[in-house]
Image (cartoon, rainbow, N blue to C red; front, top):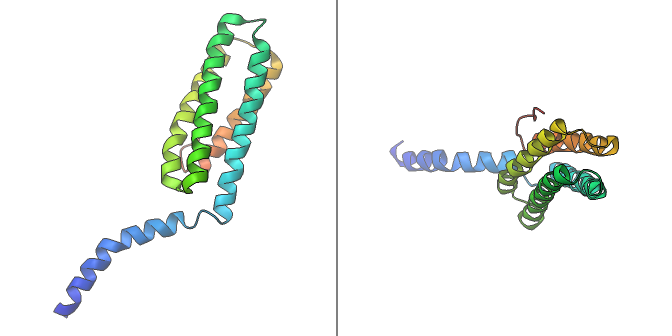
Amino acid sequence: MRKYIPLFVALALVWPVVAQAQRYGDERGERGERIDRVIRDCEGRTADFRRAVERLWGRERHEGDELDREAARLDRSLHRIRETWNRERDYRRTRSNVGAAIDSGREINRILRRHRFHERLQNEWEAIRHELNNLAEVFEQPRIRW
């Protein structure tokens, strides 16, 4: 029995690593495809939103400046998520970048609630809010309270 003690100790040390790897699994399968789709949808919606914000420049300049900065920040965050995911397919490392996108989203939401912008811009933002919640979900983060 004593000869098995080192084996049990080794298993106790390795088991959490194996369980973690199984939990995240091979991110090239169905789960990886869903993550790809959610990131791609978020990026696409954000690009649409940025174009809508740029069209806003002529009308509501001051608030538009603030909104443009935050939309650019959200865009950069999503780009970082996409780059990390494409390069490494590392769920945990990519997940660590999701918080910045969510923070940007919350700030944009605050700006849009404070200033009533054009209805089309509001509609674009509504779609992004939905996509950001999907992003939070696939990276096992709490649903965003807007």
